[in-house]
Length: 324
Image (cartoon, rainbow, N blue to C red):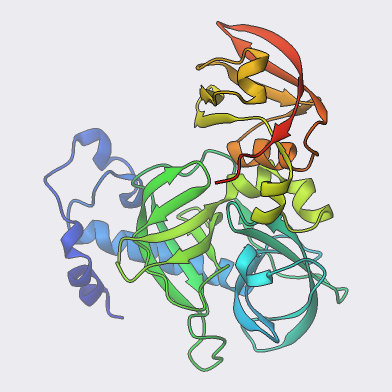
């Protein structure tokens, strides 16, 4: 696409003049583009990043469907969506952008966030993309999504959609980077060329595109690689503590201890911050849910938490999840 035509296409992003400090930044770091030159700078940045990252984007194929994914290690570890792999230990295939197909096996993940992993089983040194550090994606950041909407098409190639992060809470990131069927599991990149999320749920609305933040993978890294896919059914049958929590800059904070639950009986209160379970540090809500549901009702756990700036610990006997 010609530079001028892209500038016109993105003209809806134009806003009033920025401060001198903002002008000193790259266009993709500004709150809003100021003029067509900023839009062209954003385009140039995108065009410089694409050759570096698109080689790691794969089409994932199985007998029951297809999706997308991204290789994130030289030995062929692939991030995708849980609903793309469906289950653990399933034989699948990945296609590189040149059309070559290689065998893979699904690993673990979580249906809670829709995070999934698989591994290319053929030995080799694979092209891969870098993952962003935790907490690096913020509201308003420019991003671009890659994938194989409609399935692999060598002549068309990988499809790119540019947008911005418009929501980022707990296990879900929302952008206006448009997704289509077949994109599921594909990568969302920031303007440093790092994977910040994996495509998950697709809507007909252009601003309702949902992704699994990279934080969900990083917080559960060993579990996703070495355990079976964590399912909603497993959560229903596993141990239940009875906390409503939210993620804050201070950690996973208690909002409410459900009446009659093990959490309430133990004395946990709103604003307590959960630090660890059985010595394992807790970084997000999903990790806490997986750890608890991996236990049986009546199992005892050691929970460390912080109250009023002081660390405390409790031994708590888990209960059963209430049935609706």
